[in-house]
Image (cartoon, rainbow, N blue to C red; front, side):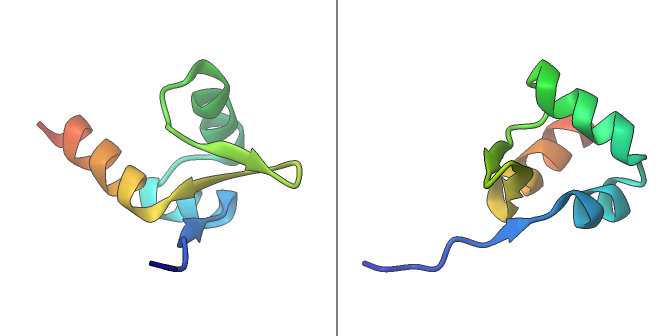
Length: 58
């Protein structure tokens, strides 16, 4: 199975969560957001972001 991994960039995450870039970076560093650095840039898998949002809304 060769599925394309869909990732959001920092700017997309900021727009979706309505947060500033600095807040999102802090959340990544603290482990609050399940992201990873790829090529020196933080990114998050779409499914992981959906999981995070559903956990926060509960």
